[in-house]
Amino acid sequence: MSIESTSTDTASLGFRRPQQLARFPALLVAESTRQGGLSTFPYTSMNLGLYSKDQPTVIQQNRDLFFERLGISEGQVAGLHQVHGTEVLLAEKAGQYKGFDALITQQVGLYLSATVADCTPILIFDPKQRAVGAIHAGWRGTVARIVVKTLEAMQHNFGTVAADCYAYVGTCIDECSFEVDADVADHFTDPFKRWDEEKQKFFVDLKASNVALLKAKGVPPSQIEVSPYSTVLHNEAYFSYRKEKGLTGRMLAVIGLKA
Image 1: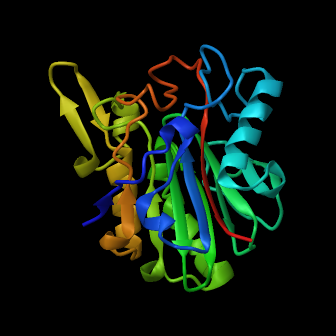
Image 2 (image 1 turned 180 degrees about the vertical axis):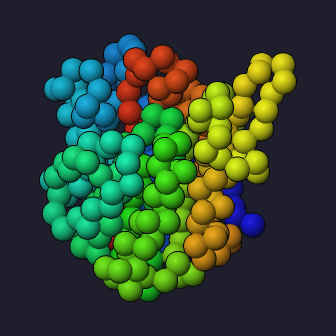
């Protein structure tokens, strides 16, 4: 079965490291929290979202702080202006790219990032081919199997075999908080949705859905780590677009091969 993360708690510094991926010396990996930054309410405090409505100068100060704590700089990071699609970009240099929801690379010293505030970040590492991927999977991306398409892109570009990969399914909205109507729930199969008779609503499990996709593609369950945290239930540590009614910051999930 997939393992639940028990990573060292560095949340007050603005990030946590997935336990399993952090064991690889050649790999830099982190998932930011909302703590340890400079933004004021409602973006308190480590808002890293370039496309949020926080003050741009403060966002950049937060990003500089976050990357400095990781031992890298903004000039080494590739990021996305995400569109809830399934396009995967082969990243060869740093910068911001529009129209993609996943990045892959073999470039040493290039760090991939996915921006989230309820959607699921997924980080992938192939230690045999020395390749990495960073994925933004909202409900649309999940049902469109973006995690599978990312593994297929890694296979095409790098020769990646899913059985060799390690994956981290990161912090996102939890099942008991992701309340939806049939227009969303109908896209999910029964194991990943439930009907609440009292609320007359469906509840969808994005983490379990993406774990199932990883397993079906061939990633061993023992090589899949799942964040135990929820953007809604642990809102003091993470931004939640839904809980905070759209007026909130963004986190980053980051992965890359150390220079």
